[in-house]
Image (cartoon, rainbow over all chains, first blue to last red; front, side, top):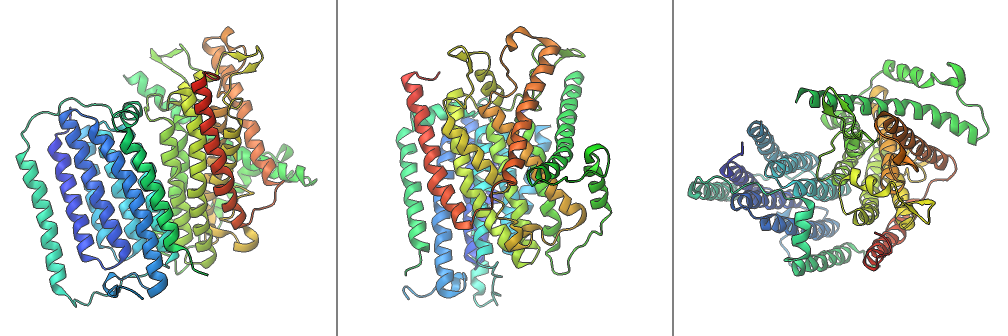
Amino acid sequence: MTIPTSNFVILAAILFAIGAAGVLLRRSGISILLGIELMLNAANLALVAFGRQHGQLDAQVFVFFVMAVAAAEVAVGLALLVAIFRKQQSIDVDRLNVMRW
Amino acid sequence: MGTAVFYLVAAVGVVSAIAAMAHRNPVVNVLSLVVTLFSIAVSYALLGAEFLAAAQILVYAGAILVLFLFVVMLLGAPAEPDAGESRPFQRTAGLALAALAAAGGAAVVAAIHAAAPAGALRGTAQALGVMLTGEYLFAFEFISVLLLAALVGALVLVKRKH
Amino acid sequence: MWAEIIVSAAKVLVIAGTVLTLVAVMEWVERRGAAFIQDRLGPNRVGPLGLFQPLVDAVKLLFKEDLTPANVSRGLYLLAPMISVTVALMTFIVIPFGAGGDITIFGARLGGLIVAPDLGVGVLWLLAVGSLGVYGIVLAGWSSNNKYSLLGGLRSSAQLISYELSMTLAVLGVLMASGSLNLEQVVARQGGQFWLGAIPQWNVVPQMIGCVVFVVAVFAETNRLPFDLAEAETELVAGYHVEYSSMKFAAFLMSEYMNMVTASALIVTLFFGGWTFPGMGRFSGWPLLVLSLLSFGIKLAFFLWLFVWVRWSLPRFRYDQLMRLGWKGLLPLATLNLVWVGVAMTMGWIR
């Protein structure tokens, strides 16, 4: 017996909302990046579920690409955080209020 | 059987996602997210995307989140400073926007016609490989350029000037 | 239905039991081997040739005081050794240990000594689960609240990520040549035929570079000397497991040995023909099963001994040397191997 597509979409929506809340509420740069990862993953899950609904593999190829982009994003994001930490001894995004130093 | 597995996995995934976003200890955040990503990997397997399930664990749990953990430890696991409610609107707005996102998801679900899934395609490595090197060859090659650019960018960002 | 479940359960028990026994045996081999290489006698008091030493050690570790230091991060501190052991136990289910052929037990086909023969992702599972092993070490290092532990954990996370690249690239070469992710297919393609009538068609022959890269990377992945920077007794006391005692320490030790067994089995399977052996076409049924197990066991034993041999022969690398070897040495070599396999396959030099 197959699990209905809506189950997966609901799970994806909940995870996305949690991730969005994390990005909006947290102040630590690492938590914000984690929230972005969670949102990307939720979107991926919805994509795979919809792909099965329509009987197409294209969605899975797309998810594969999203994973690669996420890896690139994390590498640059974390490098930025390390650079910021070296300048400010903090990764609190509220304290990032200068354009140059 | 499959349904029971799904509900178990979904519950674990949601609880650990909340922990990943709400806990104050960054190490716990990262580890909880690992659990969530695992549950998503199991969901992929339930959807027949076996290659993606393995890739999810390999790429996310095995590489990306280890990188997170590495940076957290490198920065000495900085505890988040108390928000101090200096901007109360931020919290309200954040929760409202998150609720909106969830509502959007619910609306999509409501709009889905209750049609049965059009047959479970097995997303084997072979099937995906054929598509990646055929139809999506250009995108596939472009991703490698993107990854190279990210690699160079990350190196430039953290390089200390002498 | 029930017969299949029983056969699967029996396979799990037999293979898990074998691996856990091998852990004990390897402890003895390691200590006796070290003594042999250093021209000492080694443990020889308990039982003939000191063979019961592992039992005595296990009892000793069980009855030692189980200490939890005051300022550790408790939950993660307890979780870390569990992760290590679990991951080590989960990896070997996709490795074929022997030929089942057409043997049936209680009406169920044995189908090869492999726990999960139908897992489509095959070796990908092994890489995915294996890459989780780093969490055990990193968490142990962080949660111990000890700067030596933390340094060990940090080092090992960077080391594991770096060497995983070369390892995966080396595996890719084999997968390209075999055209399958399933390790049973990888083994099947290597058996039966010969080059020039004498050289078995093992992957090690056309992919010598890949094999060397893989073996070196696997040494780094299992945190064994000369790459045991994570524990490095002389600089970090004992690295990530400084604060662990009793069975929790034993858990780390066991997972290291289990990883060694898995790694050796993987080297044998990917590059040295797995359980195949010359002249196996003449056997079938039970004799084939026994002989294939024997063949696999001999090859496995050689690589397990190689682990011990290298450990007591080579000094430890410095950290920058380790990173230079990984990124500037192994990675280009692994890429070269991949290119070579691609070219050779296109030109029809290897099937």
